[in-house]
Image (cartoon, rainbow, N blue to C red; front, side, top):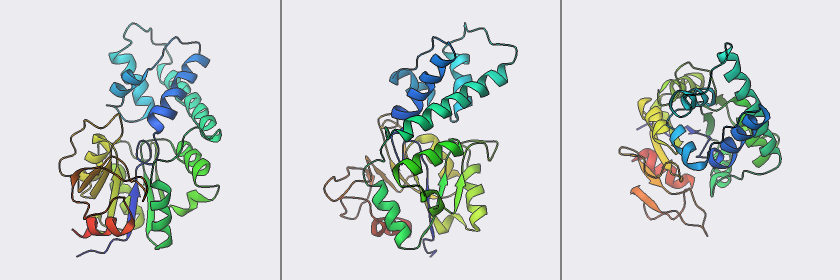
Length: 253
């Protein structure tokens, strides 16, 4: 039986409610700055989350929800420019401390670090967004805790393709049996499962209806001693919050 050597974390929705409280408002700020009358409310944004990647999400919006918009001749640059502006607004929101980590996240990362486990970030968001979140919540040097930051366009095929997880494992010279993934969405789970990784899910408002059949454990949050999780699927072995002892049991199970 393989020994757990590494923990691989998704970012958006898993570490923090960044989709609802960060990315969506930042998109709207970028649209306003560009003189566009677009506004993505929470309901619409939930539908746009069917597509991973910010630039891809803008394109999806124009293809399905705002089909009357006259695309400029330099469409690719237009989308890239909007997304770059959005990233700057997102970083601004982070710097202002507007987006806290979810319950139990900081504790679990600290436990993993203290126990000498290798850690990686595996996400479709841009590297700048990862840096902004980590520095604003865990401290200026926290990015160095993660051996690999697999983010953005580092592989062509984004989640739900398994490529980003496969790439991260390759960089760490690990097999899927050596690690466990933490995800929050069906696209993320398809990606980690496609890379043959055991996966623990913590849902959020946008993903609570997703089908996580096959995941090792599905929770509403990681939780704390005084803020217990709710088990939605799987066996938490009597635990009331996610700690490394439970993570190791899940990996070994």
